Image 1 (cartoon, rainbow over the protein chains, first blue to last red):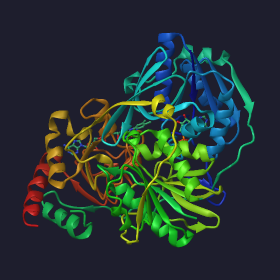
Image 2: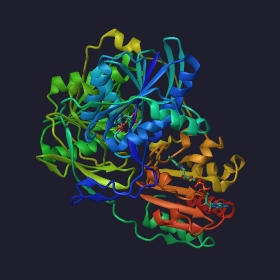
Image 3: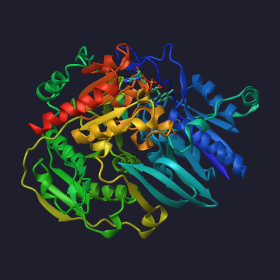
Image 4: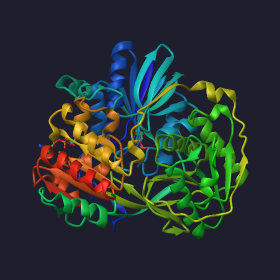
Length: 248
Length: 322
Ligand SMILES: Cc1cc2nc3c(=O)[nH]c(=O)nc-3n(C[C@H](O)[C@H](O)[C@H](O)COP(=O)(O)OP(=O)(O)OC[C@H]3O[C@@H](n4cnc5c(N)ncnc54)[C@H](O)[C@@H]3O)c2cc1C
Ligand SMILES: Nc1ncnc2c1ncn2[C@@H]1O[C@H](COP(=O)(O)O)[C@@H](O)[C@H]1O
C-alpha cells in the first residue's frame, strides 16, 4: 500500500500577520512556518496505517525551498520520502494542477490532505485535485477505518456526522478527529537524524493557469473598547443587549 | 451573465444559507446584470426564494439526490451551468457547499474563492473581498476565469428581501449510476432538538474556566433561555467534557452569530480565529486581563458560577415581560 500526504506549510498559529509591497503581499519576515494543523492529524493517521500495514508513506509539497525544513519534519516523524514541487503556491487551482500532475502516473492508494490550510483558509486544493485526477474525494473527515480495499469514513456535517462507505484509491480532506489529540506525533532525536538521510526530491513545476490573484490585503477594523458591565448590575447588560446590540 | 446559487434546504424549505445567497446574488446582479437562478435538490417550497430576488428555480426532483453526494451535486451544477450559461456560481459556507464546490471548480477549471464577505468591489476585473489568515486579514482577490465560483461566508451579507416574479421548473441532470455507487452514505447522525451551531443566531460557549463537565448545566440552561446553540473551547473538547462537534476556533468550527457569549474562555488567538466574525461578543471571565476582553463588545468581570445563574434569572424575567 502507498500513501501520499499532501503537505501545506503555514505560519505558526500565533503569528502576527503583516503585509509588504504596498499591502499586496504577505510579509514572511520573522514568521515561523509549521505543518498545517489539519495535515498534522493526517500525518499521524498515515503513520498509524503505516505501522499497521507496512505501507509506504510519501509527502508532497508545492512550495519554496525555505519550506524544506518543515518537509524534513514529516520525514523525522516517519514519512519515507518527500517531494517538493518548486513553485510559489499562490493560486489554489495552480497548486492543485501541480499535485494532480504529480499523482497522475503514480499508484497511491490513499491520498491524505487537510480540510483547509490555516493561512488562506481556502479548503479548495484537495477537491480540485480529485476533479483533475478522477480519484474519489471525501472532505471534512473526522474518522477513517481501512479494511483491505474498503474504507469507512465519518464526515463532519452541520450538527453531526455522516458515515460513508467507499473503496481505495481515495483522497481525503482530514481534520481534527481523524486521530486523537494526544496521539499527535512530534519528531524525536532518532527521527531527526534519520530524516537527514531520507530522500527529498525537488521537481519542476508544470504550466498551469493562475485563476486568481491577490491584489490587496488589509487588517480588519479594530474593535472599539469593550463595555464593561458590573457583575451586580446585569440589568444594564440585558438593556444593552436588547436596545444597543439588538440581539435579544 | 446569470448567477446560479445553491439552494440548500431543510425538509424542502430553503434554509437561511440559501436565502442569504439569494440576497447576495440579487444585490450582485445589480452590478453584473443577469438573472438569479437557484438550483436545489428536492425543494418543495421554491417560492420562499422569490422573496429574496430569485427569478428562476431549477429543482432536481429525483430520489437518488435525497442524500447529499458531492460528485453528483457538482456534476449537476456543471450541467446547469451548461444549460443556463451562468457565469457566476454561489455556494454557502456549510459542509456540503464547501465539499462539492471544490470538485466543481476542478471540473470547470474555474476560479474559486471561499470566505467571501462582501459584494464585488469591482466587476472588471472581478474582485471580491475575503477573510484570510483566520480572520486576521481581509484580502481583495481577483477572479480571472470566465466562470467564477464564490463561497460566501456565513452571516456576512445577511438577509435582504427583494421580491422577484419567480418560476420553478424541474431539472433532470444526467448522472451515471456509478457516481451514486462509488461513495455511499451509510447513516447520518445529528443532534436532535438542539439549535445547530452553524446556523445559530446566538452561541453560548464555555471553556476550561468551568472546571468540569458537571458544570455545563448552567451553560445549557442559558442557551435554552436564549434559543442559542452551545459551543466550547478546544481543551474542553479534547478532555472529553463536551463533544468535538462543539469545538470552535482555528482547528474547529468557525461561527459568526449575532451574539457570541464566551464564559471562562481566555481568548487565545486560535480560539478567536473561529469566533471573531461574530457581530457581538460578550465575555464573562474572572480575570480582567483575559485577552478575550480585547476582542469583546461587552464584558463582565466575575465568577461564572455567580454571574451565569444570575444572568439566567434576569433573562427569564426579561423574556417574561417582552
Ligand atoms: C495549533 C493550535 C490550534 C488550536 N486551535 C484551537 C481552536 O480551534 N480552538 C480553541 O479554543 N483553542 C485552540 N487552541 C488552544 C488555544 O491556544 C488555548 O489553549 C485554548 O483556547 C484555551 O482554552 P480555554 O480558554 O478554555 O482555557 P484557559 O486558557 O485555561 O482559560 C480559562 C479561562 O477561564 C477563566 N476562568 C477561570 N475560572 C473562572 C470562573 N470561575 N469564572 C469565569 N472565568 C473563569 C480564566 O481566567 C481563563 O481566562 C489551539 C492551539 C494550537 C497550538
Ligand atoms: N502547497 C501545497 N502543497 C501540497 N499540498 C497542499 C498545498 N496547499 C494545500 N495543500 C493540501 O490541501 C489542503 C487544503 O488546503 P487549501 O485548499 O489550501 O486550504 C491542505 O491541508 C493540504 O493537504
